[in-house]
Image 1 (cartoon, one colour):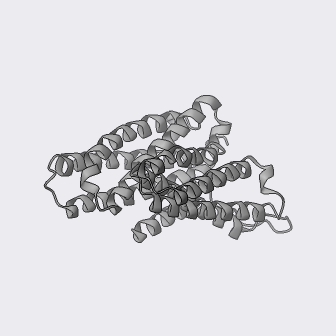
Image 2: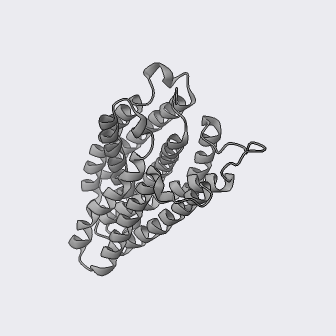
Length: 287
């Protein structure tokens, strides 16, 4: 699974460089943010997203210890994001920006979830903290391009649905691959994943059209990343169908068959999440 994370970071860096969202080179004679702070903020943002998604996934199955550990890491990474943001602004208060305020909410909710999971020993009580973790994913997502869309309400709503459905889809699969009783949860998760995939696809289209016109998908760098995300999503849907067709439908299939498809899906999902992170820094057409 470590290789999956590395692949995601590499895709993130490549997408930022090719898409135009990479930190710019300093201009001689002008004060500019440190490129270390900018790159560090981008990579930490991706790592924090991964940690949040894992916290959601483990919470879906009542795994309080694993969910709490992921949430604690999420909290620490969010604090690091705030530090990079302050560095980027040359020590000025990070909370003066919309991004900084969103990170404070994210970190507070992640810390609350981690604290709650550390206190409870009941699986149902652990699952009850799932909405807190889901809510923590939303503020940072909405602090990006949704604020500049033509219809901010529609863009914000579609982006929130996109993020929450993706978190349950990806996080649930990762958790399922880690827990011992995966077979008992597989059929139920498969049904949830199918609904999440539909929600991700539909909300993704609506959110993307708020920032890029159909014709600009093929004529802009931002549109190219959106198109690549869409193509990869189709691959994920196909992998999910294979999972339902050959693993869920035949519950006699061994763990090896499940893990083989799950590893492919998770690697692909990590790449999609990297592209999503890159989109938050890539200027849309006309932006």
